[in-house]
Image (cartoon, rainbow, N blue to C red):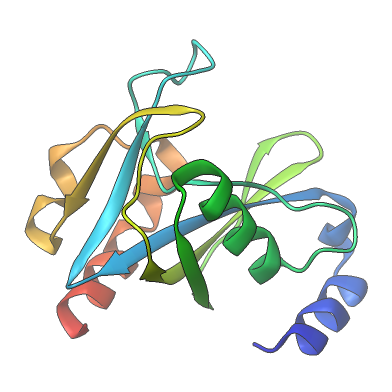
Length: 146
């Protein structure tokens, strides 16, 4: 989806009143990056696809690419939005995207204390946050076709 279409869809979408959080299934060499949360306490120790909140006026793809740089120190490109959207809490909606690593070596810089590259057969090896777990079949499909 190009950025003009993304902005237009957001304007027409009643759920667009929610603040959007984007997460990235960062894929590189047939593996996806999982990040273990170090905070807040209620999710510490569980795994997720890294990302963060979109800023006002920022597209989802812009937000994801910025967040992956801030959280992991890497350049990445958002590819396609994965099916589903999850209300993290009232007014905050999570949308997950497939992304590709362009440059850099991911490091846990902000809210994570460990990173792992997982293949399709290893996706169940970590304790995912519930909303990230729901998209694992789609991520596994992407990994087996990569």
